[in-house]
Image (cartoon, rainbow, N blue to C red; front, side):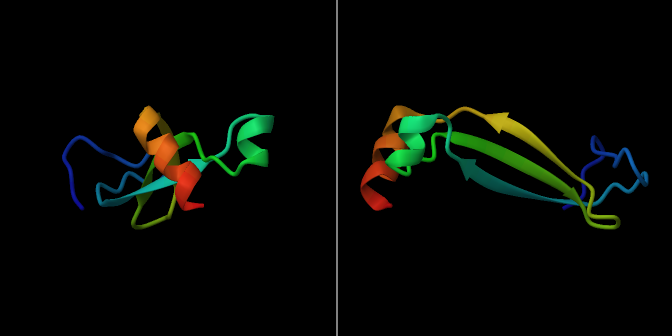
Length: 69
């Protein structure tokens, strides 16, 4: 993906890939394997420098995650 607004802070490249990652939060979410933290990643295509940005999760996605794990 190419975007005029993104410039890699390490190498100055403008091409990147985006992804998504989910993680658990506290003790109870680890016990029940509920991944209630969501992050969006932006990775430079040239040097693979990656930044993570916290994203909002909905209650519905957390409930769905509980029953699908």
